[in-house]
Image 1 (cartoon, rainbow, N blue to C red):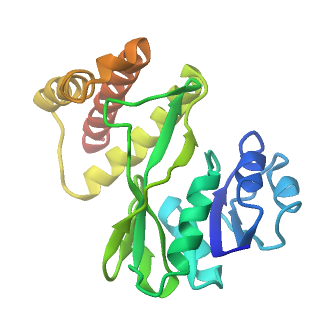
Image 2 (cartoon, rainbow, N blue to C red):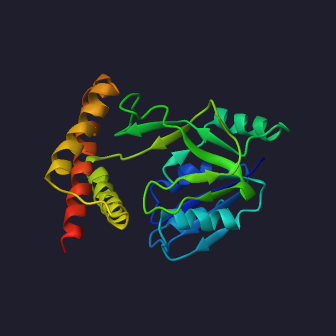
Length: 248
């Protein structure tokens, strides 16, 4: 058994959740914060844990913070429904927790897959993200999107990775792009940032060249090209929606 509370936030994740839960079935505790899924998500979760809390959607950061508050182990790991533990990551975490000299939190590399292919360039690898931390030493940063864990104390880096099955189709990516670009635009508006022709032209172009050229996305072939174009579209939509919200 891994002496860690693993927190998962769900909403209609029946396609992904079983593989995620199967990869962590030996954890000391699995905490699920479900935003009233209407598919089989909760039924699947009940096969692995009885720590299921159904809460109205509050945003990514607040949902995850609620999960942290329900966790009971000294160590907490936040896992997304489309992520999977690897055996090597499991062993490394077990070894770290058994070591008396601990950091307060650890960054984990993610092996990101797009349309089933591991993306090694364009800023997608190793894609470190802070997921493992001491429960009393961390909180979720209050953000509408791209939320992250804020840790009090030192942080370290793990060597072994999570597997992250991102979008399995272009249509799935476009749906997510619409949601995230809206959230990001609203967040920018709240910060007093404005948009205009310059940002609508320059920022998407910079995003493309940064991913495809500077971060060697071209080495992933058509997958790298597709991601660079899609990220550019996301950037354009974000600033276009910011312009729209600011002019209502």
